[in-house]
Amino acid sequence: MASKLCPSSPALGFSNSLLLPKSRQSTETAFPKPTTKLWRNSARSASLHQSGAEWRIPRAMSSAQSATQKQDENQNGSVSLESGTVPKDLVSLPRPLSVTDLATPPSHGSQVRVAYQGVPGAYSEAAALKAYPQCEAVPCEQFEAAFQAVELWLVDKAVLPIENSLGGSIHRNYDLLLRHRLHIVGEVQLAVHHCLLGLPGVKKEELKRVVSHPQALSQCEHTLSTLGVIREAADDTAGAAQFIAANNLRDTGAVASARAAEIYGLQILADGIQDDSDNVTRFLMLAREPIIPRIDRPFKTSIVFTLEEGPGVLFKALAVFALRDINLTKIESRPQRKRPLRVVDDSNTGAAKYFDYLFYIDFEASMADPRAQNALGHLQEFATFMRVLGSYPMDMTPTGRL
Ligand SMILES: O=C(O)C(=O)C[C@]1(C(=O)O)C=C[C@@H](O)C=C1
Image (cartoon, rainbow, N blue to C red; front, side):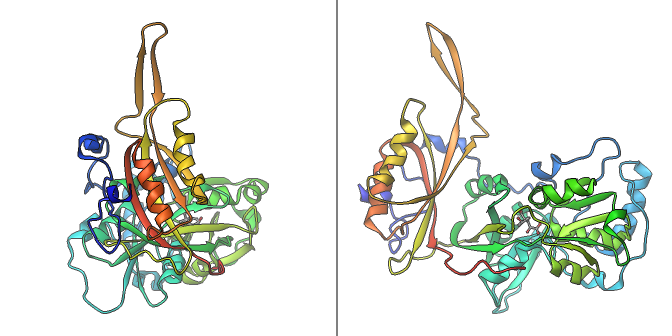
């Protein structure tokens, strides 16, 4: 059974590819190839739009750009923001990568370049530095840009959030893991300690709205409801802080890190405002090549698969791990975008329509472990599609704090 795992890389014993007999690989059509399109605004941020005078945090703005953009947007009426002075030192901050930058050749220095989503001061930047302490952290506008930056050799790795202990899964990154062909080479867990930031001299009672990443806003639900402020979505926490500073918004606060306060010259109005003091985000480290799985230290393996419709199929799929005493650490299901509904015709009751799902599972075993190889060989007997996303060391370090 293990031989069906078709190693394209002999040292690994598995490949990041379809692990099915050729006859059944037609399921691949359900999974689109990587696309060059970048999504500027994620569905998650879209969900937090205010009705009426809706506005968005422009991403990746230098302060000069923000002033021009503010004018433009006021003219077309879609944005209404207060004007203000622009702190000089904001101009020198690195600008996040956008699609136009992806044509730029990478630098060939010896330092590892690691893409993250957001701007300096984002939790993702801290996670990148925890994962690769000596790295050059490269800000990217969107998750998709971070994936592409690795694929196009602009950077060596990407570090992206996948789940949070309060907010749950970052669904966008589950979808992107499947759409792209990168390998998970590690994980890093980071304690997320949120602060409420405002311009110097502002009191938290003066705030009318609070801007942040949707996950960060939802992690601070309790504090924000007691403040009675309007909540607005930004692409990342530090971007929200940068925006307030660049536009001198006295009535607006940001949920972000203490480091973001330092970088953008904001004041900490409240500290530790997350609903639970143990607020941890798990990030994945992604690379073009997989690492060699080992058995001399705790490893995790992440896979994605689809199943036929029918009673007990998921139970059967999970049993392949239980039978071998393999512990599952995560299960996530996502609808298949290209084939959301499965229509089953029954002459007695008519046509039933089911949502069709992709199942993502993390389990505690290395792909070098025969138990894992046998479990996946077994699963492959009835899965309609399966791919190993990566086999990587478990993060056993303390979660740290930003
Ligand atoms: O906005 C940031 O600072 C991020 O790094 C993003 C992000 C996320 O995507 O969940 C990461 C960690 C926190 O849970 C909040 C936000």
